[in-house]
Length: 291
Image (cartoon, rainbow, N blue to C red):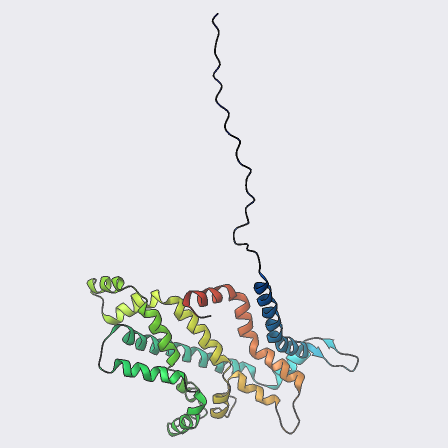
């Protein structure tokens, strides 16, 4: 008897039940992790509580009936001081100092990172020593120097002591030392000069470090208070932080709501810039190594 045989493919062994996989990036928090998280939250709340209180007092208008929230304190503080001139002075100072620090720091870091010359290590030790000395130690000598140059109550006199930063030199030197030598050799073969190599090879390679340092410098110089308070004596040169002294009139006492409103006016530009570009700022810090 003949018939048609039907070939039936052998049944595949049943697949093992899929193992429940943990979503990528998720991990089980240990007790130590939870403790660190709680401590971080407490530290964060303690850090931000003064800022929240300043904003609260700046926008709380006392009217004898419990108060209400409004902009009266902000407008009153703005009218009591030439904040427009203060903003202009601060912008000129911050921009000039940051650009000067980057130019001088990049040139010095380039020399320390890529050239060999007599006394190189000794000079770099002097740079590092400056990092260990508080700037306030030099204030009396800086004041005599600035006064001798006739730069008291000028923007140049306020910014001159800060145009060279030891930290900028050290930080950029570390970034330049990480640039591959092959890029430098390729630029030399192309006939680039030393300054062209700095501009076309080292500066683009160290761009995250340059941006990160510029952000630190802008924040530091924007909030600088003591030296500008000593040098500036008129509203034509006072930066915005020193302008708050107007609200500390000893004959009338301190008007805290107006002081809080002035503080909000001072920090508003930096706070707004950070909130708008916080992702870019954080990425620059992470890529450059600043934590």
